[in-house]
Length: 229
View 1 (tube, rainbow, N blue to C red):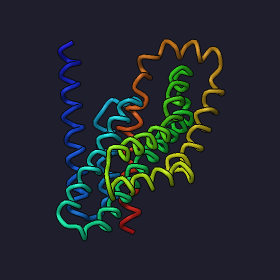
View 2: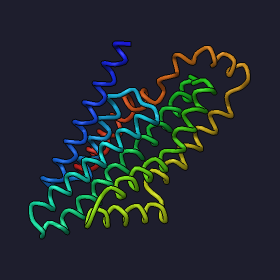
View 3: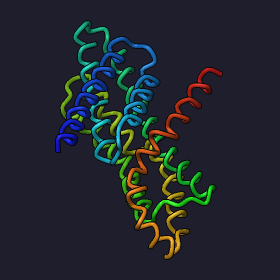
View 4: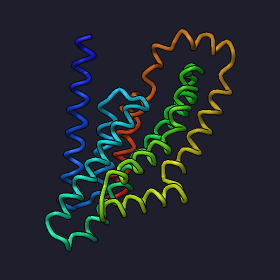
C-alpha cells in the first residue's frame, strides 16, 4: 500500500514537472513542436503506461500549453499571434508524440511476430482496444482545455479542435496501420497459443510500457537524425 502511495505521489510530481516544462517552452519560444514531442515521449518512457496514464500525460501537456500561452499574452498584447502559433505547434507536438507511440506499438508486435514470439491474445486484444481510443482521448483533452480557456487561447484551441474533428489527426492516420497490425496478429494466434497465452498474462501485462521504454527511444533518435539531415 505504501509503495502504491509513493508511486502516486511520484506520478503527480512528474506530471507537475511535465506541465511546468511545457509552460516554459511556450513562454520562451524555440522549437515548441519538437520540445513538446520530446517531453511527451520522455514522460511515456518514464511511466508504466495504460490509457489512463496517457490521458494524464496529455492533460499535463495541454495545461502547460494553456498556462504558458496565458502568461505570454499577459506580458504584452502584441504577443497574440506568437501565442497562437506556439499553441498550434505544441498541440502538433503532442499529436506527433501520440502518433509515434501508435507506430511503436505496431513495430513491437511486428518484431515479436518476426522472432516467432507471441503476446497473449488477451493482452493484444486489450491493448488494441486501448489504442483504438487514443485519437478520441487526444481530441477530448483538446476540447476540455479549450472549454476552460478564454479569449485568444480559447479561439485557437477551438479552431484546432474543430480541425481535428473534421480532418483527423496524425494519430488517426497512424492508428489505421497499427490497429490493422494488431488485428492480423490477434487472428494469427491459434487456440492452443491462446490457452498458453493466458498463463503468460503476467509477462505481457506491461506491453504498453515495453512499447514506450523500448521502441519509442529508437523512434525519437530516428526523428532527431532525420531533422539534422
